[in-house]
Image (cartoon, rainbow, N blue to C red):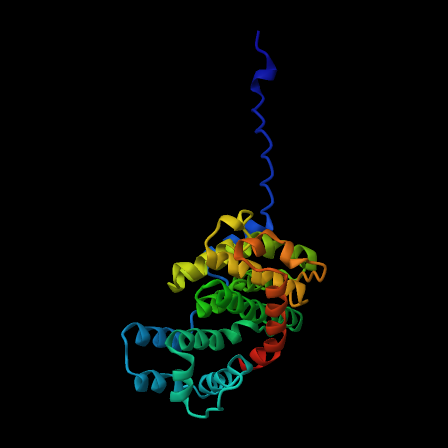
Length: 295
């Protein structure tokens, strides 16, 4: 006997809804797609580095820098800043480069060229980037001062400190692009800072790898929040501890004036006692306003 139930068409199983893409995944997708304009290494900085690597003449180096008046002016300001206090004021770019030295000149050119990266047409984002710039300059100054006391490369430490948080700029730009396409998608400051914390080291390292910056700089960016910092290379420890100094001084997105710096394991690893740290803090505090305006 025919069973009419056998004529029924099978009912397709209902499809499971696709899992919502997390914000972290969205940011990764945005960057892979090329929809976000990533910071680029300034052309003049690339040219200066090439000339220095080829041992080009001082005249050739100065000629390249002089083509950008704003850059030349900033370099002169930096050579005459409080970082070189006590030396005779100079007004000639040849003398500025000679005073700074080739490595410091290269790093200063990159630093000055990168200043515009810390800007945004959105007032809220621009205010946050201004905080990041002030934090980065403070970390750079602290890193250079620590390196001078610990036998590290002072200018490499300065550059690593200045650029250690560049991944946060990429995150901020990506969030802004997502928000531009969907104005209803807004992030709280807490959520944005959580994204900063989880992504900026990895993203910063990837960006610097594209720029072909030295491995030491990439390690500073990638590892300055590592949990085993006392086992990391000295240059990573220097930037990580400089980051703590900036927090103690209030120049941070997460300031912490209660930090007892000399009791931190990194202070012991770097050989910085309470007296040395007091001197470092005083120097950084004195130089910070001058350096922020010079750069």
